[in-house]
Amino acid sequence: NRIMAPAEPVGFKPIDGGWGWVVVFGAHISIGFAYSLPKVLSIFFKEIQEDLGSSFSEIALISSVMLAVFLSAGPLSSILVNRYGCRTVVMVGGLMSGLSVAAASLANSIIYLYFLIGVVGGFGLGFNLNASVTIISRYFHVRRPLANGLAMAGSPVFLSSLAPLNQFLLDMYGWRGTLLILGGLLLNCCVAGALMRPVRLPPVTSPADKEKEMEKDPICSSCVKNARGILDLSIFKDRGFLIYLIGNVMFFFGAYAPFLFLAEYAVSQGVDEYSAALLLSIVGFVDIFTRPTTGLVANCKQIRPRVQYLFSFAVILNGLSHLVFPPLKGYAYLVIYAIFFGWSFGMVFALIFECLMDLIGIQRFPSAVGLVTIIECFPVLVGPPAAGLLVDVFHDYKYLFYMCGAVILTGGLFLLMMNVYNYHQLHKEETAKDSEQRQKDLENQPQVQQTSQEVTGQTEPEAETDAGGQKSL
Image (cartoon, rainbow, N blue to C red):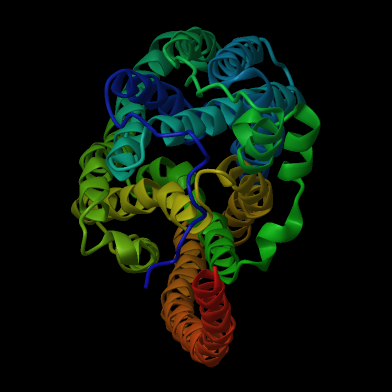
């Protein structure tokens, strides 16, 4: 009794392999930069704060604006993907993010950082994410959970690599020189986009078939129909989608603040800067193995029909990790926290798009991603500054971990309970539908018998007449 998604588009069959694995590699790079960059910027916070004279809440707003714009770029990215293709959108996104981060090295005010890194860079990363996830859904179906897990593993791979690299570059060249080098590295997203060969759909011969195909498949729709599909609010009538959306909003409120303040929290406990940056690498290293492993688990026959439950468990585990470990003193406890943090965070992001595909299906997935990401930008924009405000008020980092953990745990429990209710309701609806269909079949059976008898009664006299006529002849 799984939540059924709409059928696949007519004439469209993902190849589940071949060049698709090269596409996964390209998506691994673009998604890796998209998700890791806002987190590793936290390594520069102390230096930027001292240089520009900003508070914790003001400095945290850099990553918040970047994440919010990054997520709100979803609808625009979906329109551009359907109009120009995934390859073009990823390459343009890589160019935007690379040039904006490089230009930010010249900023002399935090306002410029908000605009260059937050707005322009956020849009570039948003284009990368949406297009990369969409192209995977077009290349894979049976192996889609595994492909998504491998692509999403780009985030922890780049996080574990960029965190110590940025600390090293920061000591060598300062935050301005490091941003310039980081901008150059981001241009590799253009190369990743070049690997995303478009999927060729079979031609539609008949005009009537072409019109039906365009109505069913957003890939073949016109730009106007695509825009209308992005803004179509009928998706909110789906009960499972609403449950998913509410749980996601609560998760994203507390998801990124622990990343942004983990290194500073460790330094405040007497840990040296390199060991503090190493905590982010540990989170990323554990995340590297968690995402593909979770994708394999989610692909099992026993788990895939109930993948929403696995997603709920991952969110609950993430919330508990923020509540239990950070208040404990000592670097060893911080390492344990980083392990659980990376494990739970990796599970969530290995499943987050797979669960949406499971609910919505491939036809409406680009539209659904656009709507979900633009809604998620609001908690992302509010969460980190709220956490920074707690640090400014209480001069203690542990309260931000309490706040994030409590909100995420509540969202996970909500997902778990409401998914139980949703599956139960789906089972009842399917049972009622089957009973109604059987009742209709039983009601139609006497009418069919009566009709067949009437036809038989009319046929027999005609046969006799024909026989009599033959005799008279």
